[in-house]
Amino acid sequence: MTDVFGPQEWTAIFLSLRVALVATIAALPVAIWIAYILARKTFPGRQILNGLVHLPLVLPPVVTGYLLLVLFGQQGPIGGFLQQTFGISLAFRWTGAALAAAIMAFPLMVRAIRLGFEAVDPGLEDAAATLGAPRWRIWCTVTLPLIAPGVLAGAVLGFAKALGEFGATITFVAAIPGETQTIPTAIYGLLQVPGSEPAVLGLVIVSVVLAMGALLVSEWLARRMAKRLGRA
Amino acid sequence: MISVAIQKRLGDFRLDVAFDAPAGVTAIFGPSGSGKTSVVNAFAGLMRPDAGRVSVDDTVLFDAANRVDLAPQRRRIGYVFQDARLFPHMSVERNLHYGGSHDAARIIDLLGLDGLRDRMPAGLSGGERQRVALGRALMCDPKMLLMDEPLAALDAPRKAEILPYIERLRDEVQIPILYVTHDVSEVARLATTLVIIDAGKVATAGPVGKVLSQPELVPLLGVRAAGAVLTTKVAGRLLDDGLTELVFSGGRLILPGNLGVLGQTVRIRIPAQDVILAREAPNGISALNVLPVEITRLEQGRGPGVIVGLKAGEDPLLARVTRRSADRMALAVGQNIFAIIKATAVGPQDVGS
Image 1 (tube, rainbow over the protein chains, first blue to last red):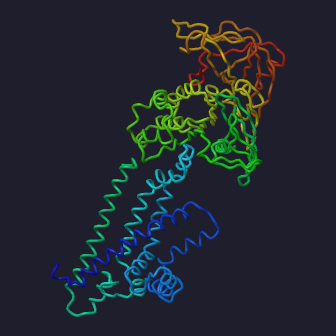
Image 2: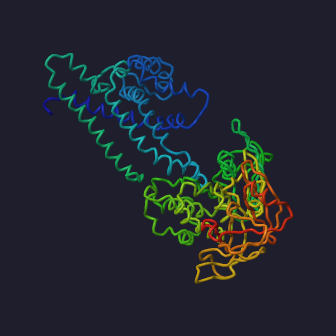
Image 3: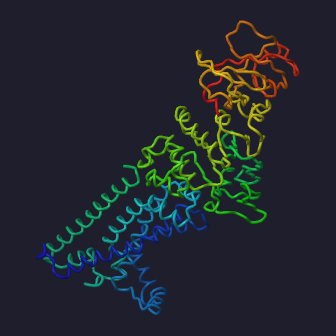
């Protein structure tokens, strides 16, 4: 398979993994927080928050990518601020690809984690409070372990989504080899070049293997967790 | 000494409850939806009243007027929930020590938990779960214990298995216990004080023997649950027949079974529907217990029954007869008649120590 891939394909594979991992890890805490709010709190504007979170799921990815470009581009309100204050530039950088992947994966992660919260009886947290546990301890010892299966499911879904993100990524950060060209954009690019079918097939196989691997790891972790939760 | 006086609006439901109770077990009894759990939650800090005050001994837990509202974590009140609420991902051992390890060895011994420590909650029976929940609450060294229908989810044999533990607890752990139930035999066995709540209000509160023998409360308790509680002493054992002789101010009672050692205090509940009345001392009947009594009250029920309040010595008794019998016997307040109690009427669930 080494012969099939040139350096550009290998770069795309490692870049994809990096983008997807960074996107998942960065989005996870925010997704847990938003899922908690949506599952447990009632407040005015809850439906609006819910809608905003789900927007990337229903919008055409190109639209999401365009909005990111407008907001986070060098002239955009957020992008300009980040550039001037921290010297961070997202447009046409791999970090921008990670942001696009994170935004697109976010609704899937929130949905899975929210189900996790809804499966936990808040009465257990009340019980922990009557036993004298401070809130941070309740969170670490009761809530988090019990929602762990939901968090895991959300992370795997998010990772898979981030790995395969195409529309928003190519719109926001284009497909610059070595900087923003991920597996999907690489496949798309190769398809325009005659005689590159072996490389395309290779990248397709890599995609399948990565997705399958993520699923297997999550299954294995889920089984271990179920055992630890005493449900096995 | 526990003291509560709170108001709370929950939709259309209004809770307005006030009572004080001395040390020992205070039972809260009432139909479902009457607000029992809300009162317990007000002690735990899981429900914030709109107004009022809640205190245990000299600690004020909640006082709307002075803006006192201790967080549940800081109240040091043990809570045993109806559904136990053990942490499913922790072993029994970790559950027990979650809130502290006060007096762990004795509590584990008292509740018979030693063999369960390595197990996970999912593998425990309902009775075992409640014992673990009780142990977990006690290991926090609580100043008060709340028990919200801890036995409601259990079948009769499981209840019988756990009740002696709660009795031991009441006698050995010197903290007030607030115990919610809708089972009058649990009240009779465990409680010192009884508070009856109906539709968000206290219908009556007082010493359990006094409250349970009030004829006018029978509609609230239900005719099957009505019955007086007597505090008696074991006076002897009829070994050959497997009976125990108990004495109280109204005379002596002979009941089946081995009900404790000589001189021990035994509380028994005599269901009103198992007391038969006679104008004259009966002869040649199989019932062993015939007590001379005085009628103190006649209460017409909504159905065909009449509740008769009786006094045997200094202790009150309740009997339930049909209106037809009451008319035929021409029962009237002040009459001296006889109450006949079948020895087997008092079931083992009605006997406490």
